[in-house]
Length: 442
Ligand code: HAM
Image (cartoon, rainbow, N blue to C red; front, side, top):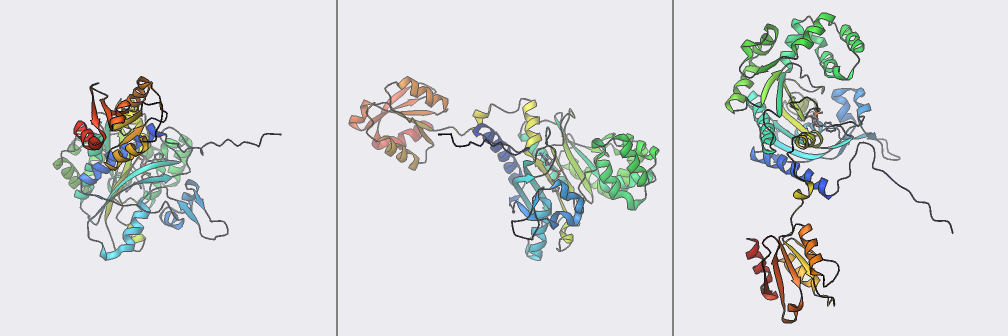
């Protein structure tokens, strides 16, 4: 008889399977994200993983659709899209809650985002993203507060300012700079979107589009030259004149510099007028976190979006925030040897119970259940054998701290407890087992 046909499936392009070691590393990063946000006073939220398609096209236009996974239910007539980012969901939520929401709103979230990108190093079609947002505060102090969360996270994961930098800019400053180079103000949004795409474009196409917006070839060259300038916080006065004027003319950048310095963040941050950010909703500060070799894509990005909540029908609500994905931060940590081997992030069992008697009388499950009810993380052998050495090897491989060996002592309702690190062992009565193990685990 012919064998039934078999099917072999692969995960969709640009997605990942997380086996236990990978998942444990992901949880390590997520734990650092959650801890950093909570330490800074943010509460965790989440929203749906898909939204009405309009939520994304209303600000960015229909062009955004090619970057989304959008769909209709079979037989339905509503267009949906998997969320490519969290900010529109957040703005929708805040707009919907209206005045009942105490301000400032300090929220963070961790969840999967989906983008129809060409998969490449640092960019996938599904990634896990951490969002940190502060709404209801117009002052640049709020911008400094969210930047502080990003810096805290980098530091907690073992990165130093020589490994990663937060590059700041201000949409007002870029607008002034572009204006000083002859660009009509109304062409600014299109120019920012174009400048954001400059690395992905052929030179000629870039120049042609810039010319159409009213930027002369010399203005483009000047902008690209000025945008490579790195200006330390507090050193704005010493920057080339066009950069200095762009930064210092607006009160905002001065306030932000002051607020960041007051928080001791100057080693982590500098001004970079080349950071324009592609997203259409930013209105003021924009920033990105980059690792310093420049080999990887951005670790994180964010900025101020003071008009988005209102666009979604809410009260005028100033807002600032950022998001970090799990992909590039992991690459940056791996490259610097800041991740231990994946196994070391797996939860460590307290106890490994070994059946050391060849005649299985079925008491192991009851003992395992008793230990688990006592709050212990318990694993156990699946085959009874007198080869205790082999089973102890399995216990050590699982990185258990203690082994409980069911042997001849069971005849008097006792087991042998072995400390797998120190090697010492002793007999313990089953009646006292949970407290005896707890005492050993400390
Ligand atoms: P974004 O710059 O599009 O900003 O994404 C933020 C971060 O998410 C990136 O720096 C990167 O770490 C990660 N990321 C984005 N797309 C991908 C991808 N395809 N594969 C892997 N990682 C990716 C936003 O999403 C804004 N909504 C951030 C924000 C929050 N602004 C204000 N609040």
